Length: 158
Image (cartoon, rainbow, N blue to C red):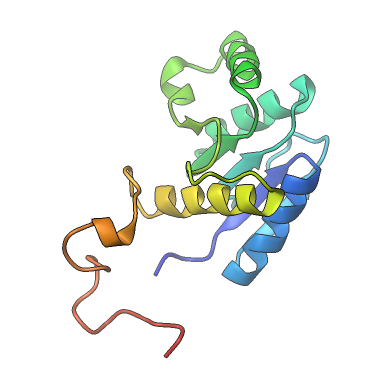
């Protein structure tokens, strides 16, 4: 089982609110900021929902500098290009940019804020678990929990 995550959300609005609400039952610690690019200590995942030049680029740069395990930015491809140009112009390398997940979230057909939050948090879980290619468990061969011995998996339903 993966350790609980420390998630930092930069931005506000319905998706940011849904991220906080959906992360709570996961047992994650969530911090938020709306206009401050400062990254708190001990953050495992940084999710940027902001679309403001003075906030989102600096927040992502801070996450990269801190070695944050998961860094993702929400927004259109145009927003991603704007961020990319800002980051490259402020000393971030192409190699470092390859660590940024953007546009953010797994492609599950999410549209509503809660669905988008689920897609984002699922991507965070997958990245933290080292899963590069994510699909349905039913489509994968072998054990459901390949890192555990048979009978050692925890089933919260009993």
